[in-house]
Picture 1 (cartoon, rainbow, N blue to C red):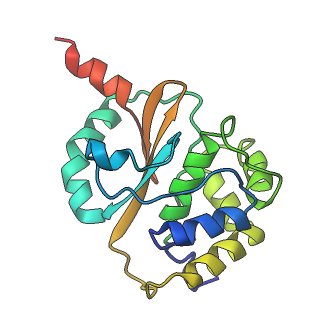
Picture 2 (cartoon, rainbow, N blue to C red):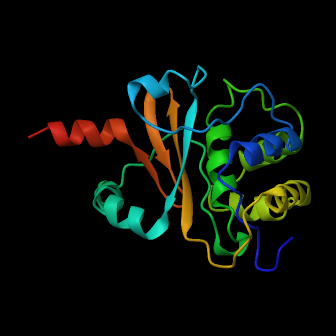
Length: 196
């Protein structure tokens, strides 16, 4: 593993799809979304189960900061959502966290198989969300699969990563944004804004 934790995964289906296979997940794939225009969205295979978004960290924090503060103030905890805090020791694993947050919240809709991810996920469900990052960093099978995948990417690895991954997942009819340290339930935000 790279010094200082996990390397960043390339934001590319050609990188992420082989990673899914390495960790034993099948029957699902990642595809690029080039536009949210209606006509372009028709080219995306169905069903769409999650959206993993890679964006510049600083710009996104500024843009989303107000929404994040509103959610934190409200203090409402999302029930039944698989989540893990990303600790600093694991390094640049936010792409893997976004992918694992997606898979963990789609366990009844995606074939998680019986491989590396499934074995870790079964253990992760038994511990608290702030312990899951350590459990992941200690999993040598997943760490090796992640490292191998990160090294196969075309982008040169850097100690300073300026991009961040989050995921949007529809679970039980509610849309959740899940990042490295926060879950936002959009149904809650929408209903709160509509009330006087």
